[in-house]
Image (tube, rainbow, N blue to C red; front, side, top):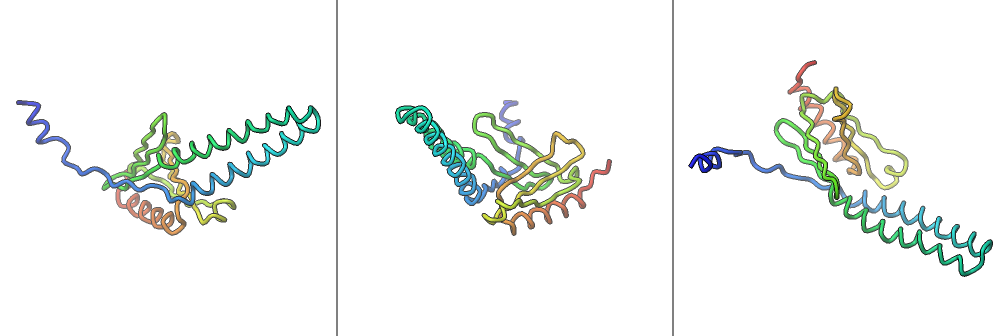
Length: 167
């Protein structure tokens, strides 16, 4: 009977609403993988073909097989990333084999920045980096649309100031 009463008075908070990353991040990472491993395949094939003979050039298929496997793994990794804005904190979840969930209380955020390197800018992406007092709890959400990254930065900054925990 005590278990039943615990269940009825247990966690009444709704499940967080998770937001996944946009597909642009997956496209960018897959293109980078194809470019780099495609070049490696060509270089290995040419070098082995010229230096060791045509039969050895078949080893160039190894980077090609790695590329196909990597395309699949990048998709699984991209699907594992998600974030949720709750009333008092931000949740970031990621990982396929080792699942990692980071909870960043709004009141503990010291700095929220939006970054975008040259490759990310080319693909129209930006990352949100969250800094807290503890270096181990710094968190990042990669591959967001720049407008969403700026919206998230502004919202997190506003909530952080409103819930400032003071150090």
